[in-house]
Amino acid sequence: MSRSVALAHLVRQSDGLSEGVWAGHTLRSAFQPIYGTQGDRLEVLAYEGLLRAFRDGEPIPPMAFFVSIPDLDRMHVETLTRTLHLLNAAVCLEESASIFVNFNPSVFTETGVADNALRDMRLVLHEAGIDARRVVCEITEQQSASPETLDSLIGALRGNGFRIAVDDYGAADSDIARVAALKPDIVKFDAHWMSRLMDTESGFVLLKTMVAAFEDRGIKTVFEGIEEPWQIEMALASGVSMLQGFALARPALAQVRGAKADMSLPRPTGSVAKEPPAETMRPMVRSGRTFGKRTAFQ
Image (tube, rainbow, N blue to C red; front, side, top):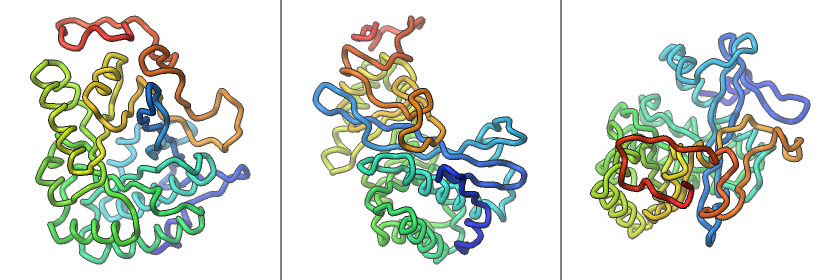
């Protein structure tokens, strides 16, 4: 894809943020914080760029938008999405934070396609003033066209200085063989799989063992989809490097730094054991669960 195609579908707003336009949809960036532990506190280390689509001013579920895209346009739209997130990250995120963006390996159908896509991405980063070392490329769970095309994609990413993350580990084809093939810097655990392991003591032991095994190999780990306060404490007890989910902070539409407080991106508040974010302070009603039920949040 040429860089001009991506830019042709971008509109720069007066506040410096960018929006995308595709097939009658307006595309905006949302960013969800990813937290790491600093002593007894949780602090934002990174953000994941997430697409929000609107039609006639009304929000459209992201999956509904993506499935509406013809196969021939998928590469264009995915490139547009990453371009949008990176340009907006330069305007609204602190410079110390890493930026996670998704790469669907199924759209890289030929070796060499990745080189072209990454050349354009490098130009976008130059325009945005973002160091490639801040960017984490999440390889999603979809199958690649072939091992050769996947190798080409990973080689191009590493060659441009980006870090690699395996997304949704434990789901579909995102397994230990994929980790062995990609040699990632980061592994993000699938939310549903991680939650099921937390349901039993034996599952939690297995979860801790996997986290330790990855950490011993120099691979950072992320638990995503943390939706309940009790999961925060269990995640921290597992030794995981980073946490992401609604129990910590929901995605927020991109805002220029310095926007008024009620529109700003979430920030960490308080100690992880004593002062969880305000939106998590609600009664928990769960049935049929005993392991991991009693936490400092309840």
